[in-house]
Image 1: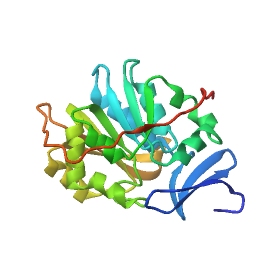
Image 2: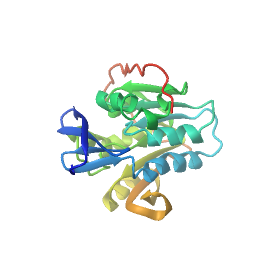
Image 3: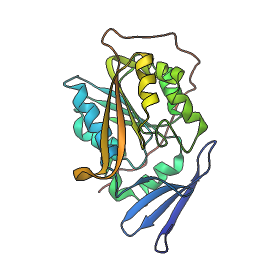
Image 4: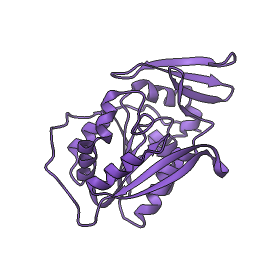
Length: 250
């Protein structure tokens, strides 16, 4: 934090460390110790995660999408802007303070997206939702931690392991897409996706419009049209649906 920053709130990540919401002027940053996880000033790549996925889905009807986690909402808002009215989006967010901040101090950037009738917000571990689905989602958007080399929860590593990626494939419909955001490139992870059986493309995007800011990476991993489904492992508990409260106006 710098001198003019204002600490708005703190949260404890399950199995992790303290997360802080900091305000600086009209902007906000979420920090994990001294590491910046996300910022209102650099969100172009989070939006690209959604818009590029929707473009790759083409004219598929009644898209069912899973987004994890909510973050600052830029991915969700971009997805809602690109999806048709017959789409549905499940948003998994395990940290309740993230939603409290979205509906409180950052309500002006939430812009009502959590009140969209296409959205269902659940307080549940993303991996458990994936485990519970069998060809249930047309797209799964993973913006969890900082990508495969995460900072916050050891449990997140399970999402990016071979078994986690196989479960993700099981949860996708034939031709469905897993889109995975990362702060850094990772050739070994690209190879792992291909070994699991995904058709993979890797796109470099920037954190700010116009090719400015830090370079981030998005993997678009498509399941084959014929599908590839292995026996599901484990059983997910019931997901808790969060009450988002009254509509939020911009």
